Image (cartoon, rainbow, N blue to C red; front, side):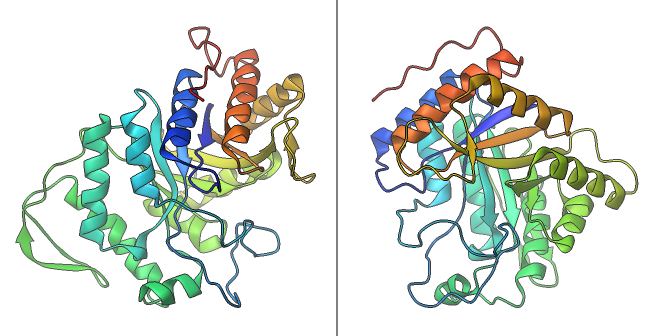
Length: 317
């Protein structure tokens, strides 16, 4: 199992300097990946939409909290790191023209030396779709066609494409191509999302699964895939964690003040078949992100998830 960390894209005190500090700290700690999520706007009025990724169906953060654009934030992180995989978990595919999205991801892959993963989701916040002028009812077909177009664009030029919801009617040149494969991980906890991940995904990404639930979800994906997942299938879940001594910590989340306990939790996730555990601070400050990386580094080193070559984290703040 590898360890990833949420970057401070959704954080009131984020700046370029702060994002640099967190990304570099994660890189120096030997963490596998730095992650952002994807929202463009949030509704200011009543919210009727619900999500399958939280127990109560509600978005877990304040909707007026600073939120950076996902691919722009990762491009910044790419410029200040050398090994960190840069990942969106998940990109809401219908929000962007499919060719523009393919170009954006290919560009980041070229600039980063092939360090890009793309989580893919169909979206759930209808009020956001409405604000962006994107049809909500057709989002599933749009997303599945977009996944197919992304793969086609990254492999073929000139290209055309004739899907049910996405069409590129006449051949166009598409360059550059990513220098390394960009895995597309399908996100979502619903039954259709799991079926989609098993059928067309290079992996799956979920949120806040406990180790027994992670094991059960992986087994369900195996069943849906006909008894076996591809050898390079990536199974990712996030876990919200409370860095020690940080005001505003959520008592429902995992406390990291005991490195021994945290190391045991990591071992449980590895045993459950998780390929990447995305560690996410429940407190959204830059300081909390940096403190979490320190704790994760120490705990991960104890159970062999971060090797001896990875030295203590030194932040740039």
